Length: 228
Length: 383
Ligand SMILES: Nc1ncnc2c1ncn2[C@@H]1O[C@H](COP(=O)(O)OP(=O)(O)OP(=O)(O)O)[C@@H](O)[C@H]1O
Ligand SMILES: [Mg+2]
Image 1 (tube, rainbow over the protein chains, first blue to last red):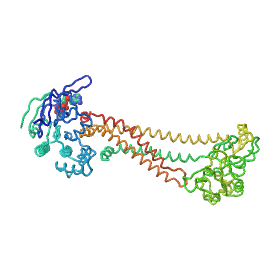
Image 2 (image 1 turned 90 degrees about the vertical axis):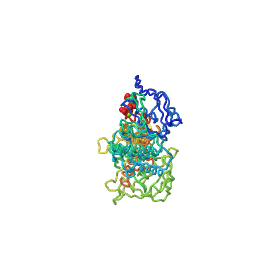
Image 3 (image 1 turned 90 degrees about the horizontal axis):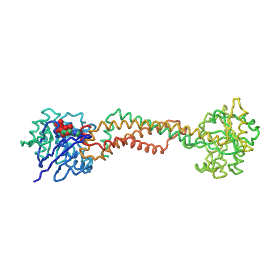
Image 4 (image 1 turned 120 degrees about the vertical axis):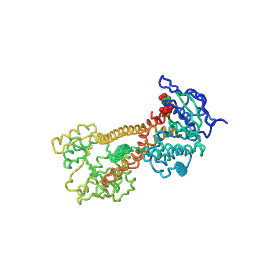
């Protein structure tokens, strides 16, 4: 059976003026459906870059990226945007909620792109908020929520359109141990109970333990792999 | 519509800033509305035209009436064939919007000085004989459906009656037409019998003739006769300025033109500063939200949707400002005295809407373009 995410010879070069910075050097990686991968490595090793490529946020320089058998690196513009909206949920270190919208409306954001009635959007957002245990905070603005709560709203937003893949860049980087563990348990349950495929960048070995396996990146190359 | 919370939320993110933008937009559109009202006032001008006629007005301004006692001395000037006079009545018919020129005149002198008007002999006689008689131009009579014998009430914004009121009643005794097509087009005015006007107005004003209309025996002698008339009253309390009818009208139009120019200059300046200010505010607001646009794109919003969102913000801002300003202009003009003939009409709504949309596009397009072309990874990193 082929992997859900199939990366072959992936190379990424940033060009700044005349300068060429090769950040990723021919990465090969398979991530099967239902996997939970922790991506670790020193700062500047290219973790965010790799994650952004998998999420269809950036274009690769060389190699190929197949997701569910589809060449994502061949998509662009509106087609790529539609693919992202349907397939991937994003969770960031700094939550990245819209400050002017309350929790409910933040979670509804991805649904605006779908052909859906206002009532259905609201119902779905409520279900997602309930899943992350925040239905009582639906009308709160991000600045009225704690960091952990904001991250849970962000998870609800990532889940609301029911994507197969969750992409998390240091999701617990700004949180204390206890809150971080709550968030990680939530991700683990999304993986185990809801079958979401998760790729998570982290610096925290304890966080990595929640994943099924850890992949190490150093200077743009995969160095080793450990299954938990 | 579903993007409305996003657009409005973004708009009111920095409340003082949006308030400032709205306030200045509102003032600009208030000016636009009031300018429109003044224009409507200016449009109701008088029309005079003729090659062999002079108009003698007070030297200071044509709005300053000359006394009737100057008449014999003007009549005595060589080259003068016939002299009439004309006092602007400034009446409003029923509704302040019904504003058309009326002049109080001596009937027989009118016939002699304005042979361009055609009026049947019976009506001519009636106008002379009826002290509160009036004659109306054909187009005017048709517009209001007047018939000979009707009583026409006019509220004068200038002249008070002896009893202190300004409600005058005139009996329509005739309907005149123009001699040719050009003069037929001008039959939108009304003449009132000066005799009744003069004896009924407050005593202090009696004997004021307005301007004198001088018909020449020789059309070639315009400049000489004009100079002779003005020489008569030099260094007297009633110094005059005599011009050909065309010059008089040009002067009148020029004055209107000046007002229109000033209004347009003010509007132009106001809109230019609004353009700069709103443009600056929109730019600033988009710059602050670069990571947010990155997130939207990340969630699957297309570049075009992002462009639309920013343009929508600019449009919402400008339309809201326009709405407030025009509403205020309507409120201000509604507070004017009922007989003040400046009014805003529906036309201003169209002008305001077009201005607001144009403003929004000019102001919103540069930042919208910028937001549209943001690369996701750079935007997320705040680059
Ligand atoms: N847009 C860009 N232009 C040029 N260079 C870039 C760009 N983005 C990233 N880089 C470079 O690519 C390298 C990898 O960056 P990346 O953000 O992927 O690292 P990371 O492993 O996520 O690090 P961290 O743990 O600090 O987040 C770094 O040297 C960085 O400077
Ligand atoms: Mg990183």
